[in-house]
Picture (tube, rainbow, N blue to C red):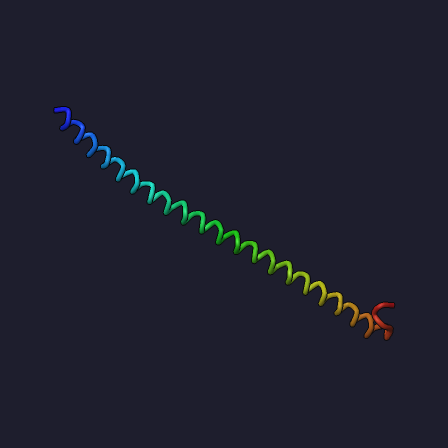
Length: 81
């Protein structure tokens, strides 16, 4: 009788262990998916901010050049005076 209970207990334990491993596998998949999504979003936002910064810098530089050309065409003097 003792051997039969031990065998049943071992079988039940292995069933529980198998189901826990399946649950952990699903949990790990969702954690990996969430982490990958967050990293992709962070990279997208970072690249967007870098793009906007570069465009702003180039636009400001172009605006200053245009102001200098306008001043030169109005006064006839070089832009730095």
